[in-house]
Image (cartoon, rainbow, N blue to C red; front, side, top):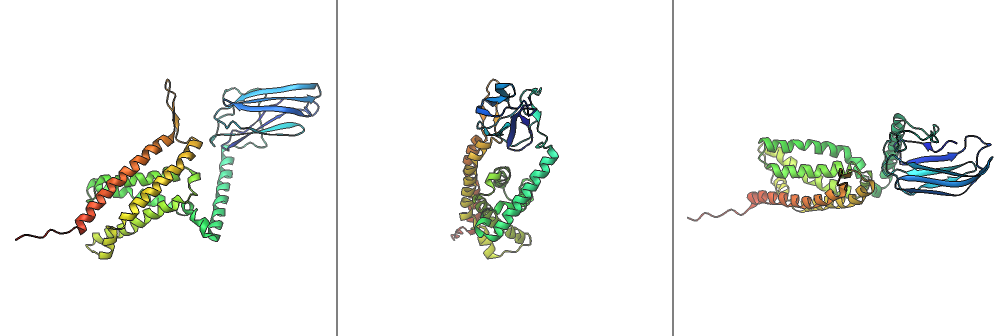
Length: 327
């Protein structure tokens, strides 16, 4: 009797099917199947009536990687279809933990996908999803508010990668800016953009993305034109005042938006287990990535203090009260 059908693709679900190889020997019905998952092992036991009378059908299957302990099954006349969800969507080398395939286990080639097929399917689904989002955003301003990442991500990636040059110029003395504030801003923004937003699809449709991108961009709208005019020894007083003033409300607001994005990402990282790891023997303690996110929240506000203090000193030097000379 063939056993569960196998699908080791990257999709979230595994489809398992328990049936007989011939119609004459097939059980006509399974009575109250007992199906459960404990410690990553699927347990199946059911009684069915076939050509040889009543029989008990039973197997145990330990999966290669972690699965969710809530299997879903559907009874038909000839088989039981069991669906098990992977905890993380990724390719598996095989279905079971043991390297040698069990004798009752056979691939279901009707549903089999290799990596190239799966990649094309995922690409098509992603393209369809993005097209749908674009159509929805064009028809609804409210929905476009939540589609900020998919609209602006490529440009933000490009700009943030170019911002490395600013830190390098400060380090080699091309500009007089101190290295530490530039480095703090570079690392902080890239962490939010590439790790929090870039790796977690669940974060990309949240409203906080709009506020983060908005505060970042508004600060730079005045800062970089000021630098460009400074290169040609031109001082436009309105632009200069905005460069030394607009950061006062925008830096705290930007820091708050970044903190909200980190806080919202913590349960997502906990659920997916991404970037979490287990310490080697004999410790064997699982370290969740959310632990580092909580530490990052503290560092985030410390970085705000460093940058705020630096910018305040710059503004005071520019607009501070000049001491009167005593004759």
